[in-house]
Structure formats: C-alpha cells, structure tokens
Length: 259
Image (cartoon, rainbow, N blue to C red):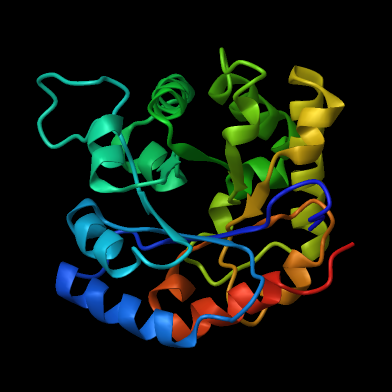
C-alpha cells in the first residue's frame, strides 16, 4: 500500500450469501466492532435483494454499499437485470464488474465488462473491475499478457478524467474459493504489472493514484503480509467478508504503517 498517493480499499463480495434479515444482523455486529479513528475505505458488495437492508443499516457509517453486478443498458427488456441508476437510487456507491464467476458462468466478455464499466462511471458508481488468470495460463507463462489484454479492453474509451474513479481487482482464478493464495511476491508482481499497463494507457500520475486490490482468497491470516506489498492497495474479500470478526481483522491489517 501507499496511502501517500492512493486510497486503501477493503471490499467484501458476499456472492450468493445471506438474506436481508441476516444482512441486518451482520451489519449490527460489524458496527459494534469496527475500528475507531482513522481507517481505510470499506465497501460491502451484497446480493441485490440485500442492498436496501445494507444501506439502511450502514447509513450513519463510512461503510459504502455496493452491488455485485449491473447491466450496461439504462432500461429495457432485460429480465432479471439491474440498471446502474437503479443501484444508485437504492443507495449503492460501488459495483463489482467482470468477476471471474460472471465471466465463466454467465458468459461475460471483455466487451461486456467494458460496457458495464462505462455505464457505472456514467451513473456515478465506482466500478471494481476484476481481472485474473487461470492456473493453465499461469503455468504457460502468459499471465502478464492475458491480464494486460483484460485491462486494455476493460478500460476501452474510459476517459482520462474518469480513470481515477476505477478500482481494479486482481483475482487469480486458481485462488478464488480454493483456499490457495498467490504468494505476496506473486500478487505484487501482477499488481505492479497492472499499474504499468495503466501507466502506458494514461499517464504515470494516473497509474500512481489508481487503487489495485488483491482478491484471491485473502483472509484474516494472510492479509497483513499481502497488504504490505507496495502495489496492493486493498482486498476484494470473499468468504472472510461474511464473518464480522474476520472482516474487521482484514480492515485492521489495512491500517498498518505504509511504505
């Protein structure tokens, strides 16, 4: 992390977990144990049906609520989808875009990810744009090229005055939900490369201020070491974000002295 230039962000991704009533219980427990004083930016991206409960519960706090997906069209015959202005009206500040589960299970492409990023920015949401490689791609030595392509296509047509509002989350697919985690050195190397891609696309100044998160099974046990890396500016947290005590430990790890 480097707070001199950019924000540290700890974002939870609940995936398909918790009901609205369970969301209220979680938020009550979380508020009771949140660190006092200065702390990093915190976001909780929850299932769509839980957004109203989450927003109500955290209204008097600095925790931002987000969605796990959005559609790129403003309205229309898209049964089951949610437009960005719907999310904004519901109280969302963030939206996760292009998670590997969305790409693999629901056929999202770099083109749809790009369209969603543009729609989110237009609506005033902060997109958390995901990228990552499979185990096969890593073993074949194409991690850097694959992720560079995802970043370039995902940020297509994002103007320079809006790139700072984008958060990029690096999630090695082979480490999501498997219990496996990239070593701090592996995670740092990829995040450093992502920053280099942003530098080439935009400028050194923009690359220096954009927040890059790590999201491959970060938990309360490995967070401190991962967050100590200079180009890892936070985490996109899966399973550990479902337990208030574990989530708070990760937030506390993000409040360590920075480089």
